[in-house]
Structure formats: C-alpha cells, structure tokens
Image (tube, rainbow, N blue to C red; front, side, top):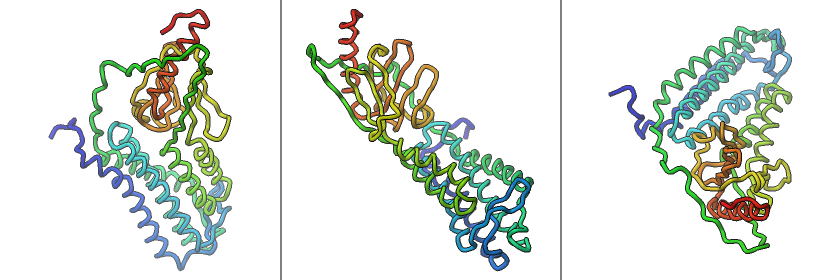
Length: 334
C-alpha cells in the first residue's frame, strides 16, 4: 500500500464516528471520576476561578454533571453534523477532525480536573485551579488533535473540474419598459445547526461559569439563528440579498457593476472556505449552502457568488437587465 493512496469510501463514512468517539470517552471518564468522588464533593461546587486560581463562582452539585455533559455532548453533535456534511471530499475534513479532537481533549481534561480539585479541597472556597492545569489542558488538546489528524485518514481525491468553466445562462427577452423581478429564499443548514448549538452550549456554560462567559456563546448563537437565511432578488436595481424578515443587512451589486451572469455548482467548504459571507482573492459572495449558484462577473474582473435555487433563471434575467441598462446608458450590450 502506498502512502499517497486515496482513502477508501468506508474510511470516509466512518469519520462521524471517529469525531464522536473522544467526546463519548471524555464523558465516560468524567462520569467515572465524578461518581467515584461524589461523596467528597462540596455542594455547591467551585466551577469558576479568578486569575490567581481562587474560586469565585459556584454551581449546585446536582446541576454540575448535567452541565458538564452538555459541554461535551453539544459540541460533539455539532462536529458530527459537520463531518457528515463535509463527507470526506477535501482536506478541510481532516482539519475538522483534528479540531474536534482538540476541543474534546481540552474540555474533558478541564471538567475532570475540576472534579478532582473540588474533591481534594476542604471546602469549595478553598478549591484551586492554577495556570499549570490550564497548560496541561492545552497540552492534552494538542496531543488529542494530533491523534484526530492521524485517525481522520486521507481525504478523497477531488473530482477534476470542467475545462469549460461556468455554464453560460441564456438572456431572457424583455420588452421595452417591462418590469420583471425574480426572488427566492435560501437557507443554510450549517448555520441553522450552529445557531441553536451555540445557544444550547451557552446554557451549561452559564450554569458552570456564569452569564458573562455564556454571552460569548449566546450572542453569536442568536445572531447565527437570525442570519441563517436570505432572500435573493434580481430586478432593475441589480442583484440583492437581504435577511428574509429584516431590511438590513443588505448586499447589493448594481447592474452597472455586472459584466455578465452565469451559473456554477459551488461547494461551500472547497470553493469558499465555509458558509456565510465569504471573501476570497478574486471572488466574494453569500454562500448559505452548497449547490447551484448565481455567478456575477463584475466589471473589475472579480466574481460575486450567491448560492440559490433556480440560479439559471436569475442569471438569465440579470443578463437581460444588464444589457438593457447598458443600451439605455449608451454602452455596449453583452
């Protein structure tokens, strides 16, 4: 077997199980340590520590194990979802597994060490969690991330790209003075998954560490939940994308900036590096899912991309509107 042989399909399919395993092992280790020391744990437990390692936040003993399991299992579900969506088609999937393992190692070590620190203290107020323990957690995260990278295997070879580039969209026939509007809504399953996951993760963080740290999860979770969809419109103003139920924020590319519109199949991770508003050299756009996309080639030579259903109709209308706008302003038609 050669080192550069592509991963087998079976190895790709088991990546979600590979991603879930450190979280399940971490949860098992945490419960084992917690149950073996439960009689020695104070109630409430010290769960938040100041810079000097002194306890300054506490959580009821009956609540703590459920909050701790939430801190492990909610990220596990999120990483498993991403592993299934990525499907092993490109190198970013290996990095995803490594990050998942690193997060599992860091979280599992700190939660387990938190139980040990409380169990060996005379009271919750006397529990200590020093800088060296944080360093140890980071070391565990590095080791587990390396293990995840090793277990992820090689990504599947990328399919060769078509040599003829994006497919040209036909131009719709518009009568003089005719007003036509095309509009569709599009949503992101990835962002819809991330938003509620961050909100769910914020609850156990609030129980363990307080509402201050929890807001760093709850605020982006609420934002992602609201911004996980968009309404895409093509009309005399150009190509516009807004939130389905909000007038702002708004992305708009005027007709005067568009050279030509075509369609292309876009992979969110491979082509744009993720979901949401993306900026790459020579290309930017709103990518809420993989699949069919409007690709507007701009007068600057760059591209603006929006993934949406029925992109061919939108591109054809956009070409017709651009041509009419140029004719009215004395420019050349496409």
